[in-house]
Length: 341
Image 1: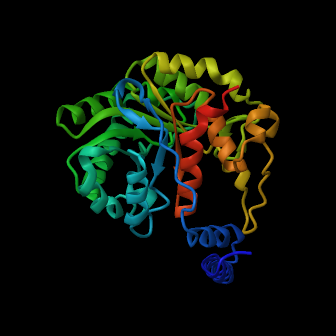
Image 2 (image 1 turned 90 degrees about the vertical axis):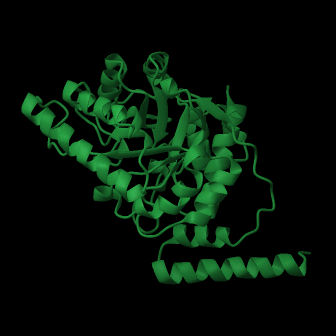
Image 3 (image 1 turned 135 degrees about the horizontal axis):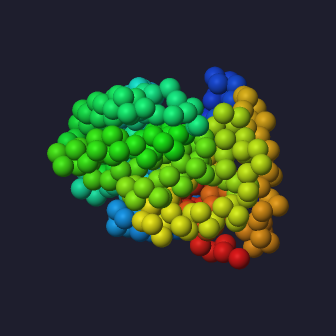
């Protein structure tokens, strides 16, 4: 028989979830809202850490992806909870894509600037496909655009320095290898505005990562990868013909050996699917898991994070817009090493 306190808490959860469902018609949002009203009955595990490439930074295995979460309003309470639990890497991006996310981080950044690894990013502004040639003139324009957006990011964040700034949404290896882009980074580093050069990619990721590795310039790469292999941004699905993550592993190890810290993204995106009822394939990755991971007391989303972390990635970036999502992703990242085959 539940106690009166438990019964009251259950009623509150049901009421909150029901109201969210009525307002949004989104089942997933309703569940998350209901979870957020529940107390932390079980203590959070202790966060684990990995050295992030040549940055030398001892990074939490969970990176807080702030772009979507902060695009419309501040979430200081959520950021503080993550920080208190041991998350020390926070990733955001230009206002040209993430609206007010950088500005909405200002207070948190001001309070913790010396205690976190702060990442932001921007596009180059060049409309080039994965196989297109990049002229010197185009590369110079891209470098100027990227530098200007970095200045905007610093202004929005109200800080004079970020730890890493990425070439965002990279898909063209020639742009990744662009000396003009690298010289723009070096100038910004010389001016004390950024410490490390990074790249993020969810299209043509294998060739982008290969270019970043071979250049010797990049400290961090954020890649869209799942247990089943590369994630494709255009199709919002697993890349057609991709090798699975175990087959990709040698490429990841080569990048790490070259000093590139590896951050995963979109690890569980396929599971969520699209549409207001989700419509994802929640068991899409099960055939890649060992028996220990399948039997673990984890959600399907947690399994996807745990798997990629123990099969080649240093850390994983997650978009967390609620306390429940934070706790779920945190637990997966903190305990991933328990599920190694």
